[in-house]
Amino acid sequence: MGSDCYHAGERGPSPGLQSFPIRFYNLLIDLHCHTSASDGALSPTEIVDRALAAGIDLLAITDHDSVAGYRAAAHHYTANPGRMKLISGVEVSCRWNGLSLHVVGLGMDCDHPAMVSALHRLDSARDERGRKIGERLAKKGFPGGYEGALQEAAGSQLGRPHFAAWMVDRGHVRDASQAFDRYLGQGKAGDVKAFWPELEEAVGWIVSAGGVAVLAHPLKYRLTRSRLRRLVSEFADIGGAALEVSSGRQLQDQVRQLSLLAREFGLEASAGSDFHRDSSYGPDLGVELRLIEGLEGVWQRWRATSQTGGSEH
Ligand code: MN
Ligand code: MN
Ligand code: MN
Image (cartoon, rainbow, N blue to C red; front, side):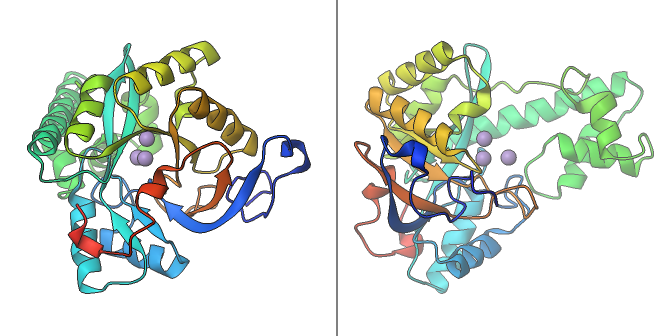
């Protein structure tokens, strides 16, 4: 990892940040990661074992629109407890002014009626989208895509990569990247937006279920500065509690920018790797925590107690 990386293991702020003290804080946490229950490569059990081996103190599993990975992980961890604290999580897909956004929910009661119906709603949005992609591909001369993609997904969450895999299997395309270039990528026939809930609804579900709503990777939406401020301001107004000030491999400057934004709107800081799989350019599981002065960390809500494994909601 490069020295420009927030959690790359360098200790102490770079000279340029002395006016903005970020102190090393002896905790390793991850409040954003994925398992094979959504689009991650590792099973929930593997993620827990990986996190334990890495010495992570606090872990939230935040699969897209699903808590199945967290449930399986909690089950495994209850049987094989360690010193890490595992909390529930989810990454909810939603919309804000026509833009697709992600809100991470942390520590919510997965069995709360608000969460149960939310997950059901998100499930059917995803399924509807899959059917629509199938229809679009059929119009291009490739019928049976929905069923084929479901088979490729083999019980995991249906997404465009499964349609690509099906097209490759059928010999419709040479490889997955050709499938995306021609049929599934941005602006192509299979680029179907799901009927995701509005941001306010998504935040409402998480809060109703006793969870904390975190705006995921705020810089990933490529908003102008003023639009990002508007988003963060609205997010705070509707019950959002925290911003991910550190997401994946991020520059210290970006952490600084997001920390200032969080402070301005009275939001807490959150941090996660957004780990999906091992790769040479992607982040590893775990974020070395630095105490950012003047900013509360959402992790402080959970770090006081000892690990409870799966008994935590
Ligand atoms: Mn993902
Ligand atoms: Mn995301
Ligand atoms: Mn994610």
